[in-house]
Structure formats: C-alpha cells, structure tokens
Image (cartoon, rainbow, N blue to C red; front, side):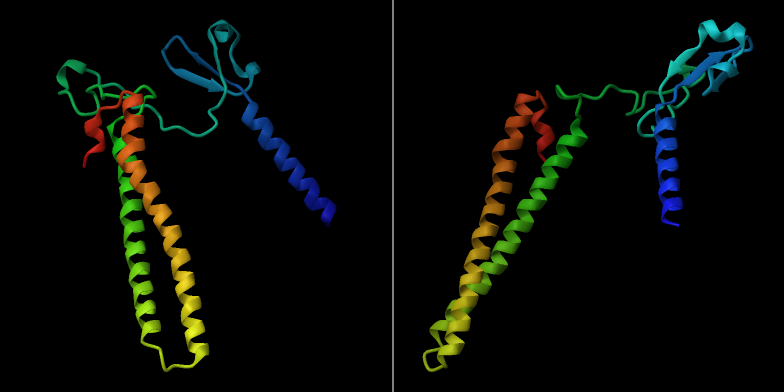
Length: 186
C-alpha cells in the first residue's frame, strides 16, 4: 500500500513538473483565427514557419482586455491616463498603502504601550498600598511589575520602529526612488 502511494505521489510530481515546462505554440490562420497547441506536430505544416513559442506563465495572469473598436469614440478614463510611478514602477497606491500599514502599526503599538503602562502604574500603586499584606502577595505583585516592565520595553521598541518608519525611513525611500512626497500624506 505504501509503495502504491509513493508511486502515485512520484507520478503526480513528475507529470506536474513536465506540464509546467511545456511550450505552447501559437499561430494565426488565413481567416485571422488564433490557434494554440501544446504539441508541435499539431501545428499544420503551412503555419509552422510563423508559430510563436511561449512558455506558460508561472502564475496565471488575467487576460488582457480587448481594445475598443473605435478608440476615438471613447472618453479618457483614469485607467487610460498615464499614472506617475517611482523608479521601481510603484505608483501612488503602493506608497499610500505602505504608509497606511506603518501608521496603523504605530497607532496599535502606541495603544498597546498605553494599556501596559496603565497596568504597570496600577500594580505599582497596589504594591505601595500593600504595606500590611502578606509577603507572598507582595512578591507576586513585584513579579507582575517586572513582567509589565519587560513588556513595556518591547512595546516601546515596536512603537519607536514604527515611528521611525513613518517619519524618516519611508520619506527617505520615497525621495531615493523619486516618488511624489504627496503620496505619503493621507
């Protein structure tokens, strides 16, 4: 049984790798119809000199939209107007999304920091008021205070990292990649 499963697994793995590397042949007949084949022998002999070989894409891409039959009759849209890009081809949407991501991280880090800070202050006050409580209770409070202080240091680093990204790193990257600085503003 295990051999059968292993054999089936190997067969599926090999067949999928063969299919990925297979070429696709494209040609157009005299009527203008586009044909595709994955086997060279399926291409009619009179079209073999005009075939175009293509490897299938790694990831399926959306099919391109057909151009309108009369371009002069269509009004320009936001899609047809050229978009400004940075040196790496990233546009305004990418930069705004990146800035929003880091602003959200900063906001969440600040919120978490404030909550832990509040808890820490509460525990410190509770310890100060625990003069007549048992030592075991005081030890538990001190342990909890130490945990909160460590957590506070960690959250402070997260907050500072996000603040640095928002205030320094992303604006510097935008400048380096010739992105419009207005793209970083909400």
